[in-house]
Image (cartoon, rainbow over all chains, first blue to last red; front, side, top):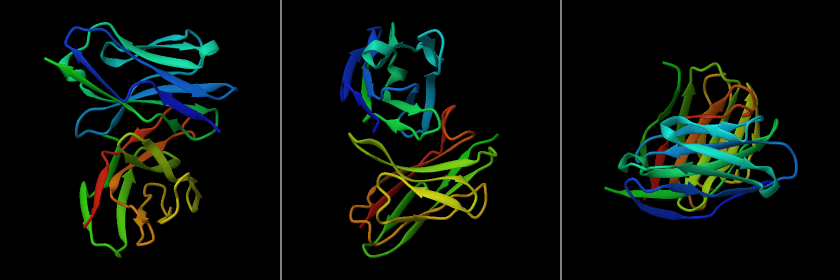
Length: 112
Length: 113
């Protein structure tokens, strides 16, 4: 069965710091990879997704993620975070035609 | 605008009562899903439906029931058999069995008192 792990439960950063949130998955076949964000009191929104092609994908609000197949990883990055990035971030994986598997989430707190 | 509407936003239930959470979408998506979100556990799949009049159990279906009589609607009933029902419930839909991502509703927070 697929599983997704996220390295950090809670990350605290100051504004303008760089961000990297780790995501690893276990599945030997071809997968689609996603990062979702949940701002306080809001619904989950898609940040970015990877299906194939360039392993470096860019999403909304300056986020990007890199797929490293050999490491089964899909880490999320942002060069300079803002207070408004405070949210919970979920990595998700699905094999083609199958349901999503979500990671446990990483809570990001950005201090002004 | 197209989207998913979940109602109510907050719901309180007494122990031993069944309660139904509403989920409606106007995206013309075939597939719909119910997830439960608990702190530190991410999202866990309760039930999903790929087509009208058909649905499948997810990872934590015990104590829950669903119906899919219309494409637009996928209500979830939390029964008295669910031992720990207090949680945040999210409904989602997708056009092609999630291959291109989900659209989520804003959720219902259920509290058992």
